[in-house]
Amino acid sequence: MTRIDETLTMTSGEFAHLGEGSVAYLRKVSSDDLRGRFPGLDEIAPGLELWALFAANGQPILLSDAP
Image: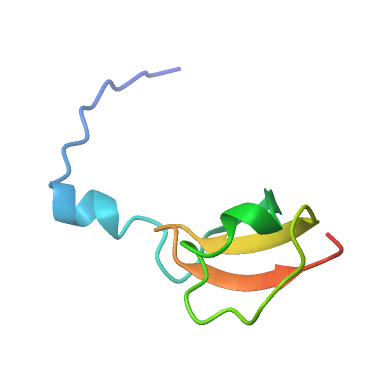
């Protein structure tokens, strides 16, 4: 077995776009914290636990009450 150690170097711009268009993550959020993450969101009851889907760069994609 041959092992090759390589160092991967990326610019900050390349790193910012890593996974763009192909990677997303699901996270439980409180309705109290949504205003800053989902601009234009209609009025929502405080204290709700919701699920949010975010792109790799943190851009919000979807908001749901079920995972």
